[in-house]
Amino acid sequence: MERSRALRARGPQASSHNPEEFPGCPVIENNMRLLKRWAAHRRWLVLAVVLGLLCVAIFSLPRRETETSVPVDWHVNLTHKKQVHENVRRVLESQCRPSSTRQSLLARLPASSHMTQAFLWKDLPLPDGIFMYPPPFGFRGLQHKVEELLKLLPDSESVPLLENTSEKCRRCVVMGNGGILRGLELGTLIDRFDTIIRLNSGPLGEFSVDVGNRTSIRMSYPEGTPLHWIDTNPHTMFVAVVYKSVDLNWISAMISKRSMALWDWLFFWQKVPDQIPLGLHRFRLLNPHVIREMALDLLLYPPPKFRLWGQDQNVPTMGVSALNLASLLCDEVSLAGFGYNLSQQGAPLHYYDKLPMSFMLQQTTHNVDRETKLLQNLVKEGAISDLTGGLHCSFCPS
Image (cartoon, rainbow, N blue to C red; front, side):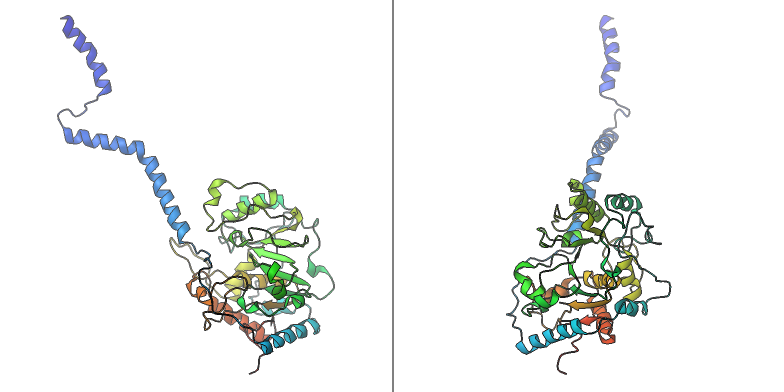
C-alpha cells in the first residue's frame, strides 16, 4: 500500500517533466517536439533571413570599380589644347549675361515650377511637396529626421551670403571628373571663375595643373565624398546630397562630429569618411527639388515608383544635378570635364584614375544618353558653355 501511494505521489511530478498528451502516438509526439524547437529558434531564423536579404541587397548595389584596367596611352593634341584655352578665355572675357542660365532652364520647365531655394534651412519653411517622393527626389517618410538634422545647422541669416546675392554678374563652372581634362592644363583659367563647383571626390593636388586649386562648393553623397579631405580653402562649402534615408544619419554625424551607429554602416556600399574638417557654417543640405526638377521636368523621366527589386534609370548624375544647382547660384554656368565618348572605350573615364571609358557601359543607374542630349541642346542654345568640348565642340574645326 505504501509503495502504491508513493507511485501515485510521484505520478504528477513525472508527468510535469514528460507530458504525454497523446500517449502511444510517436508521430504526433515527434511533431510536437519539432514545433517546440521551431518556436524556440524562429527568432534566430527570421534574423538570419533578414540579414541574408540585406547582404544580397547591399552586394547588388552599384560599386565603384578598382583600378584594375589600364586604358590606352592618352595623348593631348596640342592644337586642340590651344583651342580649348582660347575657348575658356573667350567665355571669361565676354559680357556676362545676368540670370541667363536659369532663364533658359525656366523656359523648359512647366509653369508650376518656381523653385528658387537651393538649400534647406531651419528658419525657412520647407518647400511644398518635399515629402511626396523618396530620396533622392524628396524626403518621404523622413520628416522627423530632416527636422532634427536642420536643427544642427545654422539658420540662413547667420551664414555668409550666397554668391548670387551680390550685384556682380557671376560666372560659375561645374567641374566634371571626365578624363577629357587630363593634359589640358586648364588649372589657372578654371581658378578665374567666380564659383567653382566640384563633384564627389574629384581631387586637386597633383592634378591642379589640369583642374585648378580653388573649390567654392564640393557637392557629394556619402560614398562619393573624399576619405581624406582635399580642399584646403577654409571657405569651401560642402553640399550634402541625400540618395537614401541613411545618408541623413551620416550628414548628422559629420555636422555634430560624432560617430555613426554600427548598424548604419551596413547600408553604405563603399567606405565613407568619418569626419570632414569644416566648420558648422560650411555645411549645406541640398534641396531635393534640385534633383527632382532635373529628373522629372528637364530630363522628363517618369515619377519614381516602388520596385521590390532592381531600379529604373531615373536618377540624374551628380553633374547634371550640379548644373541645376549652379543655375540658382550663378548668372552664367559653364561645364568642364563633361562628355562620355564611348567610341573611345580605352580612353580614361576620369582625369585622376585608370578606369577606361568602357566602364560606363556597366552602370545601370543613370541614363547617360538622355542626359547627353539635354546638355548638347543647352550648349547649342547658348544656355550653358562647354569649356572642354566633350558635349558639343563649337570651337572645333568642322
